[in-house]
Amino acid sequence: MKIRNLYFYSQVLRSLLHIRPIGKAIDRCRAAGDDENERAEILKAAKWWGTWLTGKFGADIRAEGLERIPDGPVLFVSNHQAYGDIFVFLAVLTEKQTGFVAKKQLGEIPLFGKWIYRIRSVFITQNDPRAAVETFKVGEDYLRRGFSLVIFPEGTRNLSDGMASFKKGSLRLALRTGVPVVPVTIRGSWHLFEEQGYVRPHAVDFYVHPPIETANLTKEEAAELSDRVEGIVRGKLDEWNSHEDFAEGAR
Image (cartoon, rainbow, N blue to C red):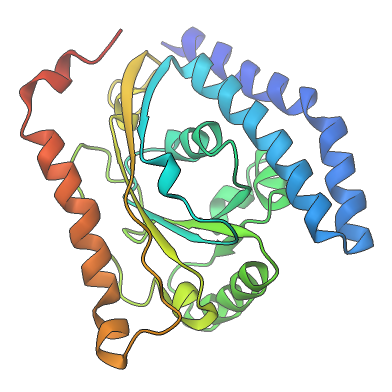
């Protein structure tokens, strides 16, 4: 198993070396304050990176509903099964630059963390409300400037085909900026690595729900938004899990 994992980690490093020239272009755009071209360069790197790594994972991604994603910045809100969710998002969203709201520890991984930061992600320090407020301010700035973000409101990987409750306040980024919320349901990603502790092929379902506009919500609607989105995401997961054939999804 260790040999299998060493091979995969070597592919991760190889992928980062391949996109290093694009990383320099991203940094030049950021230094110049050129958000539009920065988003284009991030998307170029992310598409290649996500496609490469999900291919190495052996992820057979079955995506639906991509045509529902609106133009402009959005906040994608998804359940979180595994580390591979990040790469699945990057592989699937070939027309939309996106960063992530992620744990601070993810940003501390050598090389990998630098790249997650480079694609306009923000890092949450858990159990530190004051730091979380500052982090969310950065995320709000990104959204207002046209950068999209993904947030996993469960707060951690579920490591199963189930789903935990969303943490309250996690959709504040959308409510304070007025960007649309796009619910996403993922299933199967934890089978790729976490289930057995080594990389193995498996099917991954990725479903994009209709967007929810947040700009003109009433106070009551805003207060209920997190529960509403959780119900949408969970409903699709429950529907999928009611079909017993998914266990045969490995290729």
